[in-house]
Image (cartoon, rainbow, N blue to C red; front, side, top):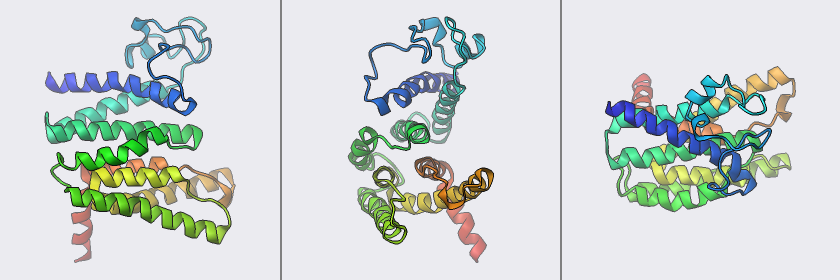
Amino acid sequence: MLAGFIFLDGLIIGSFLNVCIFRLPNSRSLILPGSSCPHCNQSIKFYDNIPILSYLWLGGKCRFCGHMISARYPLVELLSGILALALFVRYGITWPALILYVFAASLLIITFVDIDHKIIPDSITIPGVPIGFLASFFLPYVTWIDSLIGIVSGGGSLLVVAIIYEFIAKKEGMGGGDIKLLAMIGGFLGWQGVLFTILSSSVLGTVVGIFVALKTKQGRQVAIPFGPFLSIGALLYIFQGPEIIRWYFELLR
């Protein structure tokens, strides 16, 4: 019952995350006005705003205008619920579970905003850096020194890469949003998490980039936001990072 309650809470919060994803890039209030159809702007009734269930009940369409509503909405809600449940299973009802859920929810917002708009909201990453540092005093796997080094190494490493790339390619290859995002990740996960995130996101980004380049036939001109890969790398570290690191070093023996 407790696990079900945690999952349900995650679904409900996921509904709010959808609001953030839609409104943050446009600098709109997250509170007012209430939710409305993106096509006809008709206000959505509370019984049509139940996470996942309302979407299924209405067949993925607006009750008023009949336009299809993106499957992204129930997907974000489902991902939020799964993350909440997974963190509960791993950490129980504890401060680390709550802190890491807030961090994971922020990464969800960043991922979908970056996919849609090729930007990473400063309103999340800039306050996320000091919040991540403060969180290190409550997290069992990272010290405040690890966090501080993670912030500096996270933001600094991508800044160096961005400068070198721009010098060689004569164009910007990595935005400032990615730099601030990795600094935030360093605050929450420490320098160990930064190293893991950089490696895993680079591998994943390379594989996806090659696939997209071949699929679209754009070659090296294809532009793929890096924020989602950094977010996936950070989430992977939260759940399996230390285990993957141990497995890797055992292979080297």
